[in-house]
Length: 301
Ligand code: SF4
Ligand code: SF4
Ligand code: SF4
Image (cartoon, rainbow, N blue to C red; front, side, top):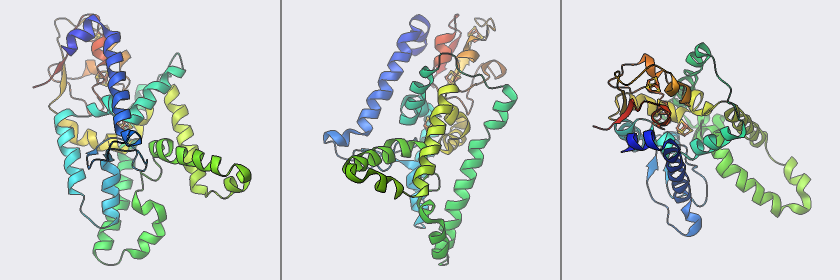
């Protein structure tokens, strides 16, 4: 059905995806409308420190559990199950920071194209970031479990509770920034004193968030492609996901429209056409919509 919709009404498919993203964004923050918080954890960048949140962030939960020397079996199982079932589909359909990036890219009429060799190297960055975060969190957990980690934890400061979460631009945008604005209004009589009292980490987070937002306005989904460790972990578990794409070689005339439309720069035409399950694919289905011959289909076993 999705394949037919993509072929006949490509714009409608994009509108549906935007409606799903927006609806889930409202649902994830529906605590502001009185909905109770749930224990559901999701492997995407939902903010973990907003007052109205109804779901949790599996990656932040994992980091926090490790900082308390608790084995994060549940968050890891969530990454495993979601990755194996749907790959990175939640990145295109549910992640609030994915939605922000999809909106930001409309600021520029013509996105910047990244050279293929630069892209190939930069894609690895997110795995390095994931590795650094894992190294910090797991070494802290191991030293705490051995009873020698308290000094290490103190030295890490706020990074102990989440090396990535502390700097995550999504956390800054959705949690830190609104809280800052509320406090700015409260301190309207001594704004300058309030601003100068803020720690360097606050400004570093703000600058990082600003830089990421500018970047994603130029390069579609640049944060997801190159930096997000949550997407990287999902990509690892989603390597053999049940969801995949299929290109019908009989219908395909190699026009390349699908590759040009892909925000994640997946080289669709260089992959095995029968079962395309690239770890970078977020199943946004823009390639389906772009194909003039209806040659691409979503495979759901
Ligand atoms: S890669 Fe990260 S920021 Fe991008 S959509 Fe996935 S979880 Fe969200
Ligand atoms: S390959 Fe298709 S579905 Fe996957 S990210 Fe690219 S455009 Fe989206
Ligand atoms: S857009 Fe369709 S016809 Fe063109 S290369 Fe891609 S799959 Fe083939």
